[in-house]
Amino acid sequence: MAMTEGKERLFVSNGSAMYEQVVNSEWMVMSTRAQGNIASGVYHLSDAQPAKTTGPGARYEGTVVHHDKRGNVYQSVDEGVLVKHDKSAFGRSPLPAIGSVPKIQYLRGQALVEGRERGLER
Image (cartoon, rainbow, N blue to C red; front, side, top):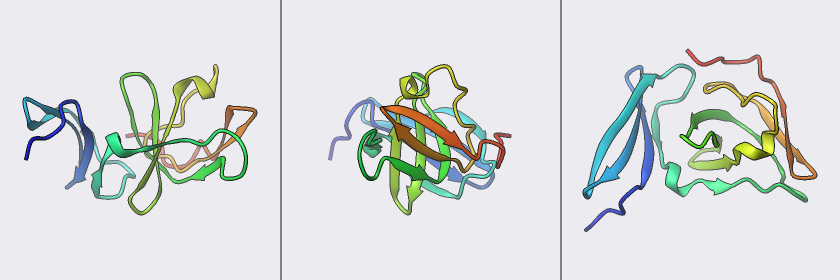
């Protein structure tokens, strides 16, 4: 079975977080960093749901597991559920740190972050 080129995941285990991408039909490690406060497991970044920015349900709480090259923020909000927050929704505010456990709520499409101080990136 062929894998989709460009598919992305974060593999977290044994103190390391490895960002992997499918290249030439194989998973390739693109970068590695310390695990920090991120729970061990496989986070399928390509399957992350876009954050709902209006209406009921436009509030998320969970561990920030990854920032991509475009600056988007990936947050684990439930077991097996990842949400992708668009960088532009944060405006000029700093992005929540990887490993932090913020509450991100949307007001008129703008991301408001509570809880920045817990679990800073290491």
